[in-house]
Image 1 (cartoon, rainbow, N blue to C red):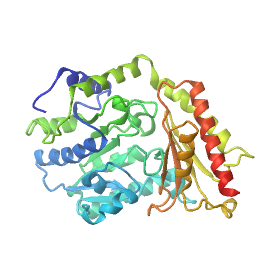
Image 2 (tube, rainbow, N blue to C red):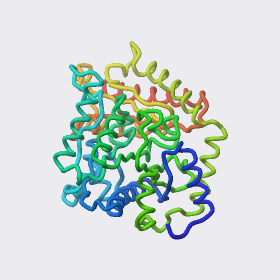
Image 3 (spheres, rainbow, N blue to C red):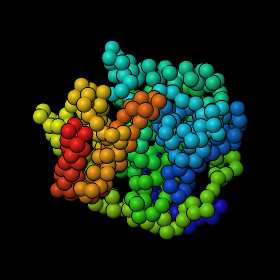
Image 4 (cartoon, helix red, strand yellow):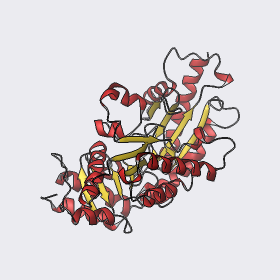
Length: 389
């Protein structure tokens, strides 16, 4: 934070000016894990510099992912990615509550409002268990990406979680490394699918550079900005290539194209088309995939398709030990489409669940959206026919 460059300052100004007052300061990193590492350190630093050094605990969620460093793996709860390192992860300062995953965990006798209230009460209970004055903040992905496959929270959830944080003076922190910077059809995912609940600190990365540069960023609210400026005046954190001028130039160019070509609106329109086509191809009566297609979810340019094989139609299915998601990912690649196949997001233990993630370009044409779905449906059907034969 001691040295700067014109590209970094221009990009920071763009991010602050386009936030409708939600953010006041920006720090740059080289990617998502670096950004979330900086978020953890910044949040702790904020309380040290504002005279609350007792605050040392973070609360995050099960079935979450926040990065591949030891501290971000501790913060997150992605069973498979944590497994090799579980004995050296920090379990003293990082704690977890239930995921906001209604399709899997909302009870049959609960309304959406009751489910949100149960999760709100669980978070408040965790604050009370740890000691409210020891909690730094609550951290969540606005839309969960890699762990569960594009899972958004029920309406009212983020507003409720933010209120708990405010009640006890803790920070409300969002990880939008995957879902932010336009992926959901709004610049920040919380604007469209997060109850409009602006965070105290937010991490962004992938969509910031659009794949043209390795860059991430930490966005700070006026509250956090004031706390740091009133203390040391700088973020006590750094990496070799943070705020690299070339990365900042590339990211700013990407953001200008998104704005000037109105790509967020196009992403929303394409998302509506993709939703219709996916449901027609995978969930319509008579389709091969219908018995196994558990859920189709998403918005804008971020879509998840979850499959479930705990159904009678799968009784004679033989995948020869291969996961369905990985088989479909490989088949899609052979057929000319890149998708992400992931497993383990359907239960807390990480032992169940197959899902495919689609992330079309913001400027994709309707013809390209149609072709993506055609190839995906074809690949799913090919694998299913082989496994059922």
